[in-house]
Structures are given as C-alpha cells and as structure tokens.
Length: 253
Image (cartoon, rainbow, N blue to C red; front, side, top):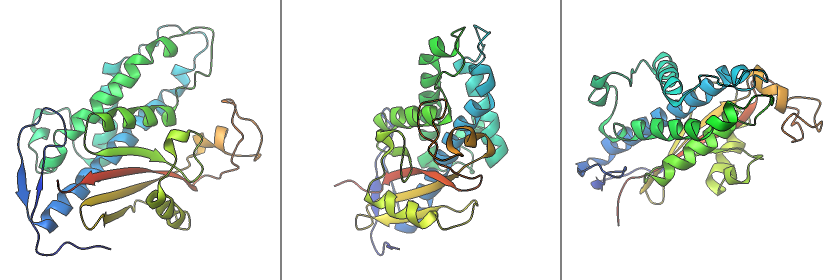
C-alpha cells in the first residue's frame, strides 16, 4: 500500500458551488477521504436497496400512479442510510456532525440529488400501467445515479463487475485486479482502500454480494435467459456480484 510521507496536499472543493480550500496533513486527509468514499458507497447502496424494496410496486402491471415519487424515494433513502450508518442526513445538524467529515458534507447531498433526478426521470416508466417488468432495477438506478453524480463532481463513483452486463460499468485495470482479489474472499463488510498515482488519488472499492432476490435474474440455470433478456450467470447467494468504486483526487497539479 502506498504511503504519503512529509507532504501536505491542498484539497479543492469537490462539488460545484462549494467555496473553500483546506489543507490537511497527509494521513488526516487520507482518513477523511477514505471515510467520505465509504459513506458515498453506503449511500449509493442505500438507494439501490430502496429500489429493491419497491420493486414489486414498480413492476405492478395493474397499478398506474405508484406514488413512488423522488420525495418518497429520498425519505426512504435517508432511513436506510440511517439504519446502516447511524447518520441521519435528513437532520440539518448532519451537515456539521462529527460523524460526517468535511469532505463528505457537500458530496452526500449531491448524490442524493442525483438519485432523485434518476427517479424523477423514470416516473413515466414507473407509472406505466399494463407492463410488468420495466427494467428499472437496483443496478439500473445505481449506474445512472453514479454517472450523474460523477459528472457534477471531481469524485468518480461507479458500479462495476468482472463481467458487467452494462458496458458502461466495465472495470478499469485497477478495478479488475481488486475484483479478482475480492472474488476469493467471503461475504463481509470489508472494503479495499489504496493510494494510487504516487499518492495523488485514493481508490476505494466496496464489494456488492448477491442477495436472494438477485438470483431471479442472476442465478441458475446458467445460460438461461432472464426476464431482462440477458443470460443468467448461475450465481449463488453470497457470491461477489461486483463493487462500488470511488476515486477521490487528493491534490491538484
């Protein structure tokens, strides 16, 4: 693992519209960036889980207006995130809470807004009567929300897998190596954090594991076409499905 020694980096505001620049010792900066990356990954996972919890409603063939608005999504995302981290982002104090590092305070709301935008633009599809499966699933949401967030920020957020169905989620060389390493490890809460580019970038990979509900499309029999038109992978519950990748610049040139 690359270490930073005897250097002080300046971190620029990572979201458009934020104002300040702050300096921090390398180890403090690395710890702050790592916690920020972890919280971003957890928040994207929370959004994915909200979509999963509402999947039956979204795919209800008989119901028109589902009432699954961006505001409803936001409230549920807050609650899932609170349950998983103990941090209530809906409370004003969360912006200055010691539990949320300064680097993360503008980034977490930006990801929430990106997720709301994805749900907002999907309303026509979600509320369509007469069609069951609508291909608005956790993976679809996660990919679109991560891409929107990344366009608005210097932090890059991405869903990826060794063999992704969506070409936009294709892993880079670093992500591929970490995914191969994670594939031999048991299901757990561990994640990978490493400094790259001579210490100028922090890479964090948080694994995603197949849940029982995922096996409808990703389970067996392997090769059989699933409801979305892709061949099933033959995966089993608890196996590595992929990872959420976060890339945070720690310095400017």
